[in-house]
Image (cartoon, one colour):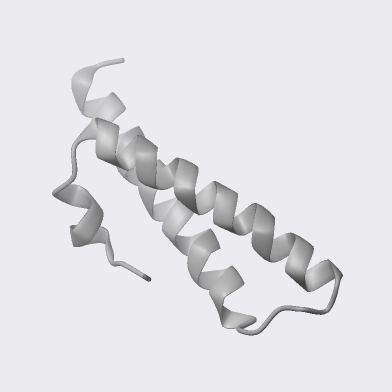
Length: 68
C-alpha cells in the first residue's frame, strides 16, 4: 500500500484524514505484533510510518496554502 506523494495529492481533505486514521491504526497493530514477535513483514512498519508522514506533509501544505 506504499504510495508516493502524487497519490495523496489527488485526495480530498476528508480522504486524507480517513487514510491517516487507518494508517495510525495499522501502525498501532504492527507495534504490538513486533512486541510479541509475530511481525511477518518488518518492512511494513517503515512503509506505514512514511505514508503517515506523507499525509501529514500534504495536510500541512494545504493548510499553509489556505492561510490557516
